[in-house]
Length: 218
Image (cartoon, rainbow, N blue to C red; front, side):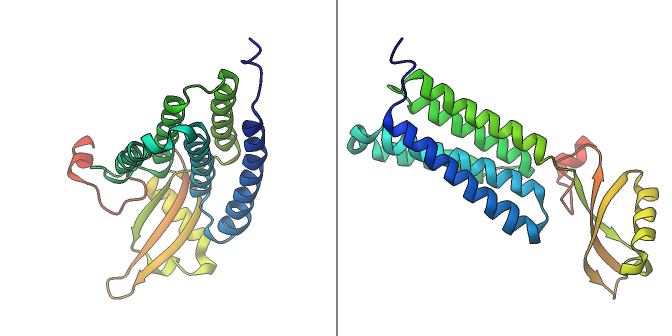
């Protein structure tokens, strides 16, 4: 019972380094990246992947230190397989779902290799990741976006932004929060517009074309 309630010196030191890592990552993502990128969904991804990678590296380096010579090749092959799952997919996956997939895989790896780790430390590790996901869901809540090929070129000028927004809301039937005008083709009288709107997010929101399987779903 005493061992269960005891934190090792290495784990205590790790918590301090984790707080530093989170603070630095938060500053980079929110103060540097978001200031220009304005993509809060990627902020969600950066923060959670940073925390997940930290715990994977900690357990790989410290927990398996005595077994490093025997298991280094197996760990390398295992990580290659894990990241292959992340990279090679048949269907496109939205950023949010991709993040959750990574978090689930990371926790599975940490829990699987944490043999010999005090249960209190393992519980704290899982609770930290759980709390990180919960906090990001509350404070980094995202709205769905959609790419649109737009035909009314007279409305894409900055002074007619409200008219453009009203026209899109009428034609799409959604409440639009933000409109960004991208590439413009004057030859074909067409502009590429990205809208952020209130509604349910789908895997086709940020795509220009749908795959055959997605067309069959509709």
